[in-house]
Length: 72
Length: 171
Length: 385
Image (cartoon, rainbow over the protein chains, first blue to last red):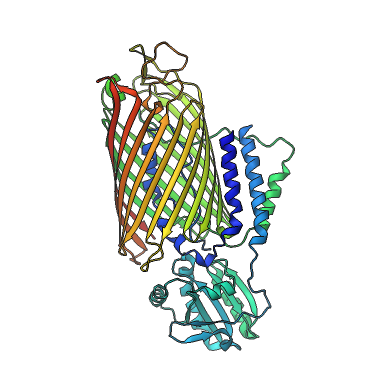
């Protein structure tokens, strides 16, 4: 239970950071580049993830969305 | 149950963060009906262009960037509007916010843009207009007052742009 | 048997019967009032990827094609289709020591639909996988929601899966039910720094072992006995940092990720990964990556039990081991301007080498602790339109 509470505390903490980051929508040029994403080629990354998952005991918590240029 | 506890925590985080972030994220976008803040920027022709020089015309300011997909989609459509209504007293100013103006120059040339492209590399004007969406479009009437603001671009927006331009040209 | 596509799930959330059912509605309303019109949640890009993959290690060779096609329909909807094949030639340690080498083929189809509505992206998908002794069907639902003008993205996900486990030689057939729940937040910390935190809980019930595999008790073989349920939790943190140069806004990026996993079988694992990506000129992108994985064994795992237990497993995936993985990828953007209906095309090649080192699993042929290395090759073309 403590580790779960730690995670949720983490979520809380950096969600609160949101008000402090102050990155404007016209400053998101770098974030628009594909190498600034967590996964630029999902088919390839999912395949590699599958190779690991069938040979290991652990699974999960490997995908996220977000970041990017914020256009539209 | 554990999952219920997680859901409860997630809900609490969500409401806390949306409430706490509200004061920090106040927009200072020009209010509808207020005077559009004046500015001067270097243009693609090399000359400095000032917004107040266009008093008496209907002006559309479009904030765009080369790294913004919807901006690239919108530019040719804006060009069409510019060609169609410039003789009636309509001016389109494309304020580009790339760090590197040459990238913007190249893209504008490739898309065949004929309206002036202004380079806001220092983001002064973006900050002045508190641009909080990309692209952003501001429509200013002949008296220099902000009349319409569009945040983002979706297919079909150009139809609203056109009817608003026509409306402002009549005044 | 080749393990089917791993699907995550948790126990189905119960409806909130605590009398505060109005709370979620209030929160949703509040969220909508305060959120900006600007969003970072957008439809995924239209693209097609054609991949050929090849794995060779530990006596197993797996190869095959994979394909992903994605196309947007209008402004708010994107549909995707996925096809994946594994052709397996297996003389793995499990197979060689208890049976004879075999060939198998696994096929997987998936379709998905993405719907963008204001600040939210809803993604629904179904996947079906089939091989001659294992069937797996999964349904997934994900919601991504923007907060604070797109600087924060909240992700919620749910998946439900059903597997059918069979044997090629008998009429054996059992089921597995799987539920997974995902929660994640991505935060833009600066112009060049992105942070993500995620959680995933999975609950499985049913026939969770391998019908072909045996356990060892004092050297003799006995069928494995697994618990009928498995609950797990995983927490991950990841970050990407970008660096600019005179030539381009981003020339290099560094990515790091960490995941902690634990389940009620007693397995504890840590995963650490780093990746460096760099542009060389205007059309080549290089990537170097390293991954370290470590896990401790399940409580009912043993290489050689001293007496018969209620639960017994000798699956090396449940043993104590660690692995190091080193890889590199090269991407060549050979089309970088509008060509017919295409915007961009890239050719990609990657090679990863993994080394597995087991601490309490032995190779019965030698009596030594087992270890092996494997090579993973990928060759793929991507097209954007």
